[in-house]
Length: 28
Image (cartoon, rainbow, N blue to C red):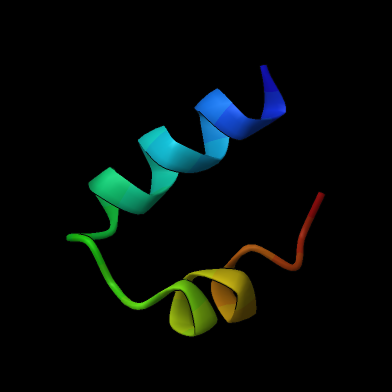
């Protein structure tokens, strides 16, 4: 479920690089 949510957020962010996504997803 967490993985699914991460994928959804990644898509919503415009498919940024995983590194960029993680920097923006620090907040729980």
